[in-house]
Image (cartoon, rainbow, N blue to C red; front, side):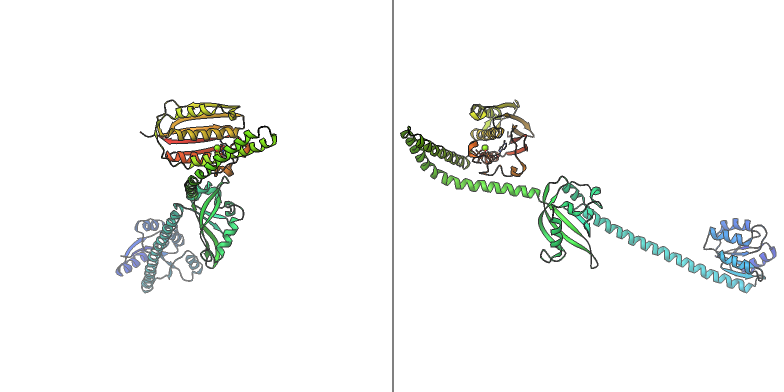
Length: 498
Ligand SMILES: Nc1ncnc2c1ncn2[C@@H]1O[C@H](COP(=O)(O)OP(=O)(O)OP(=O)(O)O)[C@@H](O)[C@H]1O
Ligand SMILES: [Mg+2]
């Protein structure tokens, strides 16, 4: 039932109006002054208030203001005297809904209440619509946010590095994989760095050029291409890049690139190439080494004979000496190749690595090239024995020791260490020589790669590749670490077997 609050200081009018309204079916509350009206209003929260404007104490206008601030949607009908224009204006300003002039006619009153009720109904409907609209908007927002979060998660958790830039190159997205790949944290890159600085000089420009051309998957697209990007520490990293230009409408707004790390793939490729090279070389050399060996022996024998014959002819002796020494050099190479191509199966038996090392060093340290070189060993006494072909392993250690000595040029220390590490026996050959520069590091295990001139000794370039092959045949590996100018450490790792 609709509740109406009726306020007038004249008790007669109050009762009259109350009766008439109750007859119309309303629930009516009455008050004779502003203060009790306010209390009643708070208790009953009526939908409509009918207030006499002129009352002693708190007048109707003040009461109107208070009611509107308590419950703005309340319909308030003011009762004013005739020609009270100023007051009417004031009431309007305070958002009264309607006026009735004294004496109040019953007809006008019920009409006015009807209008107010209609207004109230509309207001309620509007409120409901607004609320529904708010819910709809909120739901749409939630949905958007979910979609956004989903996309953000997708980017963030991609195993490939994703970097997106605004037009001009400022980085705006840099996901976790990009952080891992390039060594930068998001904070130091997003909004602070230009994509150009992630590439070697000129590369970013070329990529943008290719992106805009038709030739690499269509305009605005760059299909999987191998490039290098720069790690924070300056080191180039091989990656596949796929990229595309981002558009807003028809306007270019930026671009996005996806990078796949190729470091591991490259490493495997290199290993594969190396082992292919080794096996191809093995087959080839096995064939020709035997052929060369025989005539070579002939040349050597006859040159040595001639050398004896012309013992007294100084010049001829010198010339023949060159023939002999050069032929010997060829024979060394052929022997190296034959070792390399060794086709006899390896014979493994349990051995003490420490003993093999000691025996090897014993044989070689008396050579002339060890003059001025200090050799020390630090061998772990409790190593388990390993399954190896002793002769072959001796050859490995000899190669490593000789390389170390060569690098020290008559002055320095060779330290040989052994230890057990994660079920692997590790052997270090650590020298204080020239070290290995970064640019040849990749090549030193390649057959026939050598930096040594013939005056420096053999320098065939087979020592490391032969050793590498042997150790691989023992399911082990050789790794190298070096600080150029300070020396190198070659580490042989062989698995321990029961
Ligand atoms: N300990 C080392 N210190 C510095 N450089 C080294 C060391 N060991 C190897 N190298 C480099 O690796 C190259 C290849 O070594 P490798 O033993 O295969 O061939 P080589 O010693 O030149 O010739 P060969 O061993 O056949 O007589 C060497 O020429 C040298 O440049
Ligand atoms: Mg060598």
